[in-house]
Image: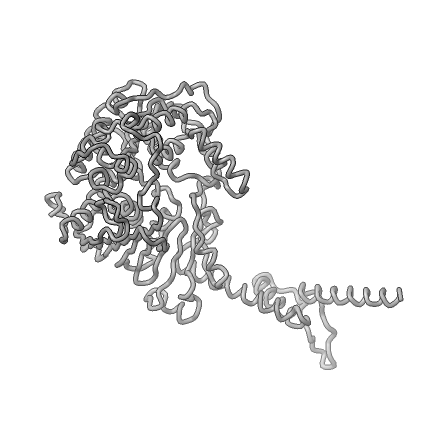
Length: 565
């Protein structure tokens, strides 16, 4: 019995050795009667053809192995074919596959110059911005600790703590709602933050009126995160008081305010950054490079969308239980609003639903989509726009539409930008840039697909090097680089999205990067990526759509006289 087992084991070992020899190319056969070598796998290839012969010989060897042979043969043959296609495609596009998708790892150095920040408006977005600067409310820290404990994949707290210490202190807080102002002060004292505790954390001072904050000698720069109707006046007053400004979008509520804020910022010499943090997204930066390389061919149509399907997504925010005329300065909240109304909790907490305080879908959501397209293609202000829509789902007393469409024409570019949105359906549709030779979908990741009637790629499509049913190539921030897609399996990875961008090999919050860019310009000079010129383009473009919707007509931009007609 033992002898039989030994024999089987010996036979099995001999079979494994045979397979290894065939695959490695070391097995050879004796010459036949005619003196010809039947198998020349053992021939050592010349230096020039070593790689190609090695692949061919491996395939030959695998084909002779029972069971595993055909499978491995097909697998390697497919891989070799895919590698060849990828090489051909990237060579055609003039792209190096080895180019890194992330910046090299760097040692984060704390800036020497301290900047004292003031925040005006400490609502949901205000808290986000202050966290981007390095300060979080203790409740948020505890919530994130719990989430990380329950789900090891939740890296929210880790990402926050790994942010660069921007060397700022939160020295002033202003909010017309007492509860929010107190939260701002609590955040300013929290030493669970990037860089750890600091003796500088003396706590922010609460200012009842924003004018007192911007006039304070304890504030160098101001973050404005109020409703839109306050953006222009606060920014103008702040730069006139010698403060640098980071302002949330939409930059202004009216066309007239847009001209006033632009003039004030430019005359002040202060650094202004508009809150479109998408400009820090790696995929947007890569998309701009792709467009500049003309990989898409002539671009004639861009489609952008915003779809949501929840009360929160439609700005029906929770009403705080402590909200009342005693805790909210209603008169100061209304301020420059065109229509004064009696105290209303609904209007205070859900202000985006009314044109008195906000800019609707145009300024709140279209502004992000437009700014991304403007960043990638440098579109500027369109020649004309036609907009339409209505209040089709949320019949709650609002006067801003919950369904909205806008068609922008750039006649000098032979290009149309189409935007559409609904707040009653959540189907995802990304930003699509359509060129004669290829289309590009941009989100937190990026996918380029060749057009089957492309002129540039016609020959490679005919030769089946390019498969138009699959992406031409993809870009995933944080991975090794752009890559072509040659199988359906890879398509899944091409459509993945990331909730952050990558810098120095690390996941980083884009809001943090946008604030950092602003602070870097304050300290070192220069202009941030979403400066006052980009803000002017954003505001005018959004207001054109709003005017078209409200007046039911086509609206045009007179670039000579700088006015909307």
